[in-house]
Image 1 (tube, helix red, strand yellow):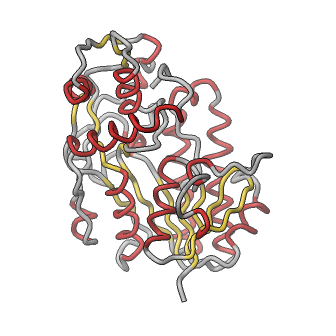
Image 2 (tube, rainbow, N blue to C red; image 1 turned 90 degrees about the vertical axis):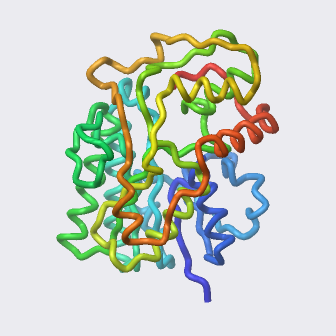
Image 3 (spheres, rainbow, N blue to C red; image 1 turned 180 degrees about the vertical axis):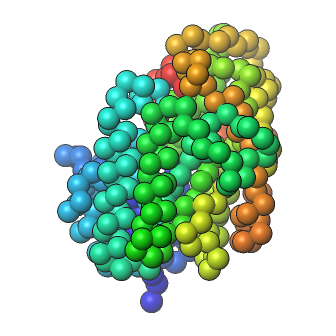
Length: 325
């Protein structure tokens, strides 16, 4: 009999890919996402695997909703979060309620339900600008945005549940995930969309900042490998490629692939406050390579090709090409 796995935030960009991944792996998948009056299942609405997924709509900020959703599942993967950094400057409290209280609800519910395994999703943003490279899991924490601070709190709360209640948690800490279905608020789809829509010059933020990008299918594989590991309970695990690229070079790569004569310019509205700018992120992959069988397979060039192809086929699914990254 297949194990039942509850994924919070399942209808979003990464959650939808992960839900489909685990269906294909033979799990019984329960997709938990935010209640809406039209029963819209986001990116899973038209999924070929929709019939194989049980959907529960509720609110990650409501304990009763979370508890009832997790009942009956042996595994919980917690993705639900507010993730846009710009909006965290406008409404920090929204991030505390969703990212901290939401994580508390998952931890408390899984503790009370004796869930077999819980994976909490972190972010490389909690490290802030790199103090050394590559950045391992012992790198100092330096939250430079309200979003990052909320994720630090969620991570520490999760570790406290492992230490205080022996809750079987693992913390997956992805660096930058990208691929089909990602919001135009993210840098790669934003640049691709502007190229396809013949916007010139292309507007981007800090061109000198560097990021370690992992393609979405590789990231799904990494979560499965972390899930299968018997060594990582109570541990934080970086997920990255061990290679980074500047936003300037990334933009040049995308422009070259789409074969359009374009230039790009720095849009002041896309810059973070000076002290909040994270200049460089580069993952140390030593821990995940040592403790699991995972290694990234998709290069940045191949991943960009796949993302461009998908966006060219699905551009009508996006409302705007001018989101602020």
